[in-house]
Length: 154
Image (cartoon, rainbow, N blue to C red; front, side, top):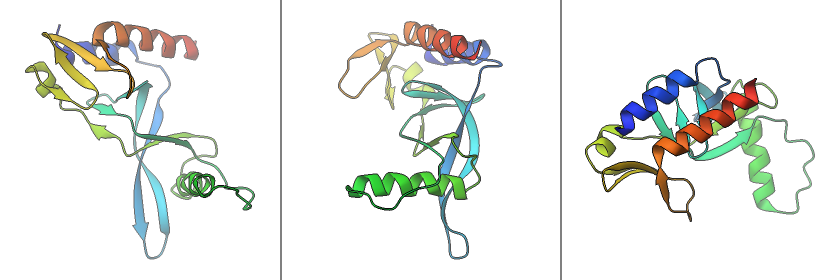
């Protein structure tokens, strides 16, 4: 089976399952820096699936008020600022937001190449499920992830 066929089947199987927000950073002289909603997708580990595209995940955060200001680490201050940007951009408090995602060229994978975490390994569509991990067949990866997401929504 091709990667596009597997992903199309996964989208079909996910109908009715909960989606998470896709955001993009915007900068405005009047509104300041914020993360605005540009869509929604099913989150399947290193993949995000919309009705029409496969995306590679990047930054995942929850929209939230930054709370206290006395951070011991600069990285904690930056994460709090990013959560607040999502809140200012219109996401509800506590909503999961994906930022910095990229579109995967599924046609390139179907042609034997690679794009994002997907590759064709000896003609088998495969996914690198972590930066340090190896590849696994996309079919079994999607089956497992779809079952997990469907089970969480039941």
